[in-house]
Amino acid sequence: MSSILTYLTASLLYGIAGWYFWKALHTAAPALHMDGTKAEPNVKLQQFVMLVPLALHGAVLYQLVFMDDMLSFGVGNAISTIVWLTALIYWSSGFFTSLRELQNLVAPISAIAAIAVLIPLILPSVHPLAHAGMTAFKAHLLTAMLAYSLFIIAALHAMLMMLLERRLHHSLVSLIFVQLPPLLVMDKMLFRIVWVGFVLLSLTLLSGVVFSEELFGQSVPFTHKSIFGFISWGIFAALLAGRHLYGWRGRTAIRWMLAGFIALILSYIGSKFVLEIVLSR
Figure 1 (spheres, helix red, strand yellow):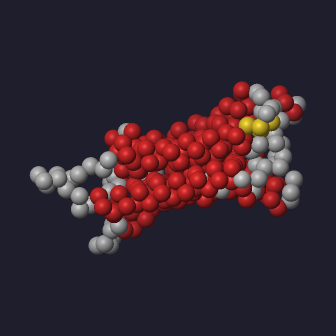
Figure 2 (cartoon, rainbow, N blue to C red; figure 1 turned 30 degrees about the vertical axis):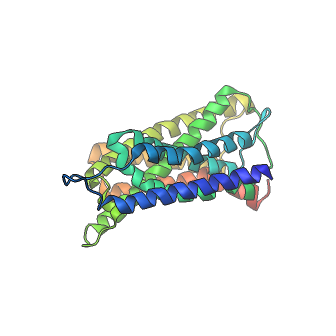
Figure 3 (spheres, rainbow, N blue to C red; figure 1 turned 180 degrees about the horizontal axis):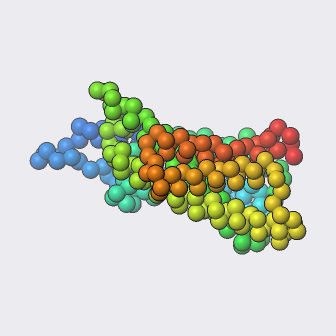
């Protein structure tokens, strides 16, 4: 019962944090100082409001994933971990002035995290992984989760750019779009995120090949997971090459970005869902 209450508490705190950020977003526009300058939000309070559910969610995940010498990383724990890392990265952006506009997206991320923290209750892990005591294996898993989280952020960023481009043609624009950086700035931010995510994805695939050879004595099998993993890597490599050689931006870049993200989701989360939920393996 206490563990269930911990999940529910974390979910509730995420909901409160999301409500706080949403309220702060909608009251920011008319808030002015006496001299007419814009009143800045209480950044320290915003950081603390989000820190509490993040810390509780992280503690819950640590207890769930690391079980004695085994690693419990089923589809529920995987989704919860990826969303937690995504929320953590967004929260961390508030410490940097140049990225502070991204705090406008913390409200929807908090709503997603409020659901994600409960997913392990619905989809518990039933097949713990071996080799959990190996530091290299943990590093491989952490690198993979960070890559997924960064590409989730990149996908959200790309979709937001697409919506922002469409909204520019309308006279009424939502506050969440008004307070975002210009499209060119967001375009540069998108490719910085993709570059970091691509490096982490490359390390994940490379370390996966090494683990397959050393632990199982065979090269990477041509499974659903590996095939879509390398397809996503190829799409992101093509995107970065197109950017460097042909200056891809806008809709072209966004389409390639989303195609790579879909392939990546099908690679890991999709394969785990089919194996654990559909086939019960």
